[in-house]
Length: 183
Image 1: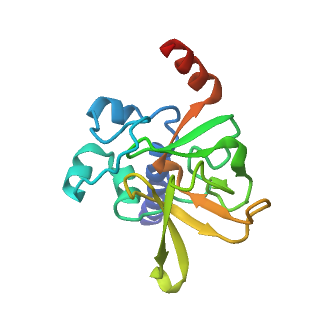
Image 2: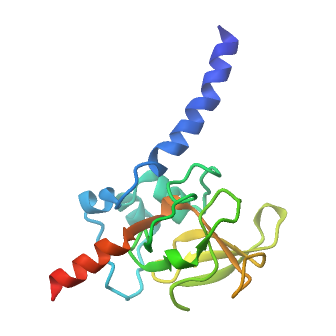
């Protein structure tokens, strides 16, 4: 009986990490909670306190965005995602990457070789865990997205290794449809 409990605990932990990342589609929590920082058109910087972020972000998003957590490899909803479209910051809606720059790196997280623009992301040194890495943050709200490495494909040679939990996605056709509806 005790052995069975020991086997079940790791499975529960694994599934708890998978649950949020398997929801797919748009970030419905942001719509329900009315996150005041979330906008796909506003380019202004977002300066909320951690307490304010904690009120409007799901726990999984908060853990990665504000506490620099990492989801389990090969569990995120976008690590093996192949649809055409745009990836946005799940905390603030800032456009980050287009699917044309996504590639299969084998690392277990979504990988891109360049952001949408030079201001989409910012870079900070990360010397945690005894490693020297470069952290990638959202250029609008400074949410932790992941890290960038210099082992990516041409033309940049970079690999932006990003957590799925901090990404929202819109299919290319959906974005075009919304644009035409506004005309």
